[in-house]
Length: 503
Image (cartoon, rainbow, N blue to C red; front, side):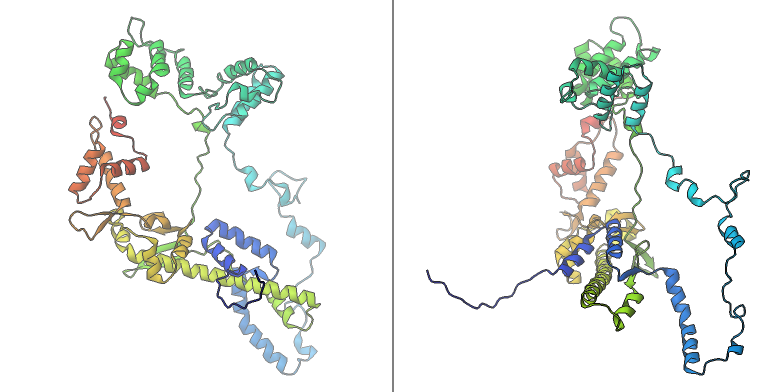
């Protein structure tokens, strides 16, 4: 084989670092964009945040600059015409008492000795906000007040640290003592002690044990023992249902349970009411249910009969090139060649960031405007008028690639008259109409129809999947039973047997 040199001309698509940065900014969510811009402001000295008050001052100062220029071009004013510093508005120097009055205005009622206390001595806002107690903190507090030995308390802290958010111990005793000098018998003993803590049922290994622990506490009052005659609903009967027939109870097979325990169906219903009053997740009251606020990226409003897309730039920093560094680079005192090269590099990076943000905003507005054009009936009348839509339709409408549309719609939200919606909400599959084969039903609107049917059904005779599919076909929606089952599962709607109510 011979070695030789050949010249070959070819074209390649290479993503420059600047282009990669622009694509990365395009797919960032609002919070991630704020963090990214804050990092850019910190790393690039040529970038600075433009404050609204600074912008107003600069605009207001433009007429004064014109006046100053005219004075500079003319003759210098005589010294006697300039007036005294007080007449010219020169700031007075602070005296010692002036500084004291300026900073020492924090005297509180009843505090005569510390009249000049600093604001730094007061607690911050975060320190004054009440913090919700977690399940672990609540159990550790009870453990510290218990009469257990230090060895048992150490083991108790280990067990409490392995509880999940629902209050269950999902690991075995052998896994708890792995790598320690503790025994499984000690673990079981401490688990029994923790299971006496509040909330009742905490520390259980499974649902049956959790409900049994709560049933034991109910047994201390009349509600736990509803009679003593043979066959009556005593606590042992309810416990037998929990321990041996929990799966049958989940499937509402009351007749099977009654036959196995030699009870009537009515007595099984009464036992079911007791079991339904128990808490299957003891840690639920301590769960963090704090709602996270979603800030929309765009607003869609109707103005003079037309739907208008407004970009929400509130909270995002407005960046510009620092005038100080711009002037420094334009002057002859730019420093060494290495300094000039560094400043040029940072200037190009700053300009590219500003252009990328502007391009990102324009692209988002363009994509949302196309979505509004396709889904205008949804904004006018509601979710039942949502049309099937795919990324390709929007891409062809605005002349962009599908991957760009996918990046724009990822993790971004719109606020409109129909509520706060993710941009991905508008892209969904379609189901063919029976009366108009060329038209399609949105899968989202079909899901909404299924939810309404289930909400309006008779609880004693719930609709089966086949019956729901038949009703949808009556409404000109061609859908199979398995598709109904799929949509029902995605909406977390139980099956007909699980929705059935006997009383």
